[in-house]
Amino acid sequence: MKNYSILILILSLWIPNFSFSQAEIKNDLNLPDQAIDSLYKEDQFYVGINYNILVNRPSGVSQSGFSIGVQGGFIKDMPLNKQRNIAIGIGIGYSYNSYNQNLGIIKDDSGNTNYFVLDDTFEYDYSKNNFYQHVVELPIEFRWRTSTPESYRFWRVYTGFKLGYAFSDICNFQGEPGKLRYTNIDGFNDLQYGLTLSVGYNTWNFYVYYALNPIFKDDVKTYIKQEHIDMSVIKLGLIFYLL
Image (tube, rainbow, N blue to C red):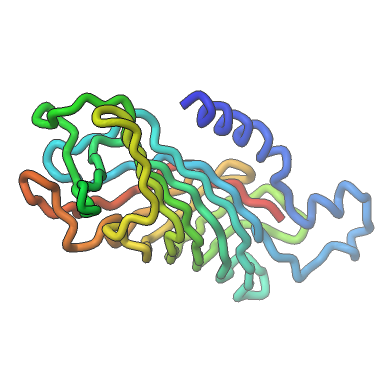
């Protein structure tokens, strides 16, 4: 938790100092007006931090601690009009997402994966339980902004769709009967997709991701009550755009 807080503080202080546009570079170099690029492109690199909220949780499942997500990548900006304030963006990126909650993912002696709700009915004590994923992402955005070739401070509204592939997932449990760690559990949905929205002015932009499919596969159920685990995620945070 302490490491996450330090990371968020560093990103919040450092990233805004490096959010700039092509026009800002030209102004700093004192180039003549005719050197301003009328065919400019905006916001082709991005980094962000967010809080992961689990929704559609089975009964008894709750989040604990801070479930953090970080993301970064490159988006090809392709303006659609002469003013270049309307564009399509297509890119590639990476995200790391952690989920601190009380859904224990534990294998039995036969190697079968069981999903326990770690509530009062769970017979063992535990001090830590989470899972996290590494995801390669393909964002597609429709972009509207108030930018001009001479201005680098502008409003933006970017909305779109993001397709992701979770190439690694890790589950951690610490308690009785011991410290357990599993990788690449079959029950996770490798393919992830959802809707995105970024809204803001200049450096600071609010970001939301709304998942359209669950984190786990359709046949995954809790061990005792046999409830389907249809949990999905909503991500809320900040995203910073660079040249």
